[in-house]
Length: 218
Image (cartoon, rainbow, N blue to C red; front, side):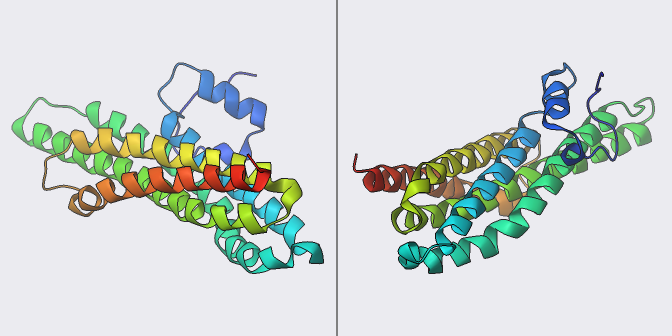
């Protein structure tokens, strides 16, 4: 079965994994890296929830119950939101391409086309910024889970951390490239927050890996 990319209202979460991979592999621009980053966020959240469940199910890991409960509160809604972000990301880029396809014969048409492109491009930065922000929020909680949660699932925390890191850093790439295509006065709040988010994501990603290795005795 063939799958084209893009398309208004396309919901990637409704596909099977095989179908989504086929869509991602096709030559059309969407779904692309931004959608893949949002999907990675959902996988990170899902794995985190699994470790939390395994921690809360056994009194042996009582020390980790508090962090497990906090992460569940964060990660359960994040699973659903990540699916929405995956679709919103590809939709935003589709609208950018639609903007470039608008007529540009008259001065008025050129102005409308420019405004449409810029509006869509800003949205194409806003969506991955949320993906990155959520991924960072999850990353900051994972070191404690790695140290106090179910010791048999510590490597799963590590994988969740890697996926959350990929989600954040991949989404940031998309934020940056879209902001680069906009005038400086657009996206000011994101421009202001982005450097800090990048640096803190780097630190948080490393902290997860260090905590996992410490728990593994490496």
